[in-house]
Length: 275
Image 1: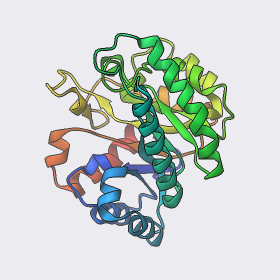
Image 2: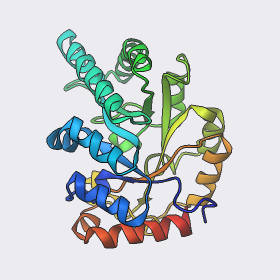
Image 3: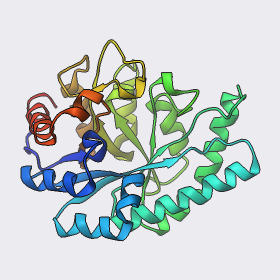
Image 4: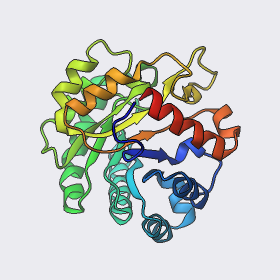
């Protein structure tokens, strides 16, 4: 059980994917959850300025904004557009007062098999974006995704790879995400969490379900419904010096079809008992 109750709990907007932003905020207020993780698309639909005011007026902090990234384009036009979009994302994160901007770095361009080259382009893009982010008070957070997403979503598959890209930059500019769904399997996980230390910018939790659904994006489960042993990971992250929120981010059709108050009540119970 967590020692601080729900004082460091954050509800990621995707966990209530069919709720509006005001409904997500209302669930945080109802249950005393102090933080929310936001996504750019629904924030844009609601209005950036309006979203920032809604969150602040209800006394919530923004644990993260998702997502920037997709930095692997292999044409000059594609790279330029990616940089423009990521600068917009940094601006949005700054207005929201987000603790970090999560970067899902992107997969292989169509027809490409050059994995090393794609990773090099991510590193080059970070060199452009990291100083801009720091000037706006935003920390970039590299998220390693499970290897099954390497081709189409993220050429970073392990925390070690994310740290290798982050470490040339000051911690204030570039950190990493520890997301249990993506990294729980890694035999080097605890070694790399210790290595990360205070470079950990975000800690996200949900469970790994089997069998995975046809759409593997929706294989995230409520903590306790799958295979992940959460306490050792949580303890390692906190021992490394992470003092931010624990963000529950679940992509799951059954969860999305359940009334939001039931989802959040279950989430809190599982968070307190299992993580």
